[in-house]
Image (cartoon, rainbow, N blue to C red; front, side, top):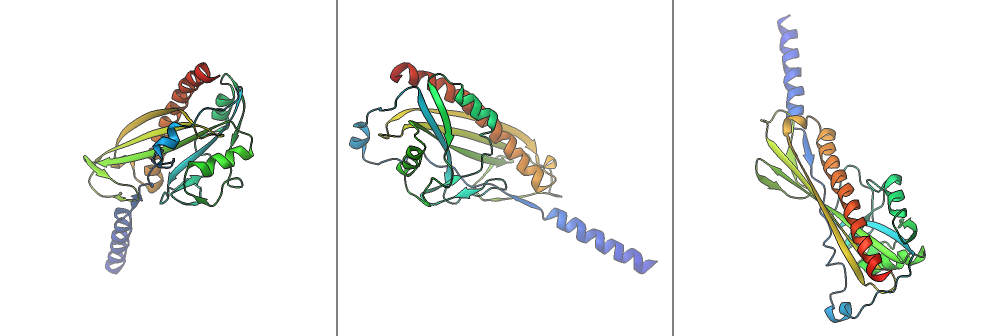
Length: 240
């Protein structure tokens, strides 16, 4: 019996040790939407709107070249990459976009249309032209973590399990830009931020931790849809 108790004790310690070593890796970073456009200010200023209304819309989500997450499927290389699966742009969200005034249709950019090497936003404009889109919406998500007041950068490790309970803040800013497919003219921008505060005790597993990230990103994206609608109304009023 004594030997059996010792073995059970060793097994429990091993299980607890594995649980204590569990960790969550934060996702990669966003794309600075101003940096993936032409750096020639004079050339940018010379661009004019050329979209025809009602307009065909297309959209793409971009993230940094090193971006990784537990749920994103990515494609491309170069200055940035594309998140090819629609994590947040659901069918309901697509229907919302299609119901905007002066919109004749919405077409997502798929990996079949996008070149493997992505250097600037013109690569996405070329892909959008293939689906006869007039205006391209490019958006990105910037999710930041703070644990006990300390910022945790992209692709960093947060310990879970038996560590002492810590305050964790997850904040996501969703940003987007409307671009004329024909000329590259920027019609407008939109942005929304969501923040959630939890404790690491709520992050008992890696999946639970990632769900906290997803919930915050979804809230930020839903807010972005509302801001996009406001910006679009202004675009139509001025250019439509």
